Image (cartoon, rainbow, N blue to C red):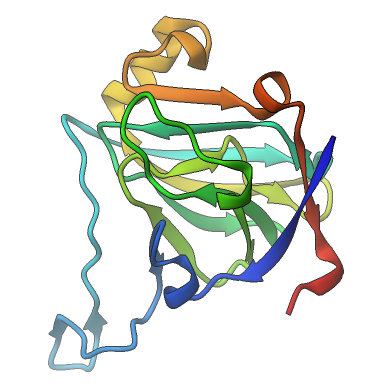
Length: 182
């Protein structure tokens, strides 16, 4: 069964249950240099080593059934090159609990801002570029999380990552509904 997801703009308020938007904040900067350079700090955490990477996501169908969450890191994604993209998220849960389909939300990533996910926030495995051929992203993640995923062979056997396949569990495939994007 298809489950449409209304696509919302990525704003600090709308994204707050899931993490932080990377960009100028609606508050005073945490630091301002003599030249006027401003810095807003962000809440990024990792258990272990930070891994900074560059990922390329090919254009694909705007639908998915898999979501995952991570224990040891608050992953961050910063657009590097390519078209606007979409991402789906659901609120963090404790291990052993999965999100309900009505809790899944979709956001438009217009290329001007990135985002940081809270620990255990459920998210689609990809950011979905709106146009071919691909979108490039800088990722901040945990080295241990990546190694755990590589060692498991799939997300279902990982220790630091949990995954759910909504098609397998509930017969649902999520589709991004672009009709009402503002």
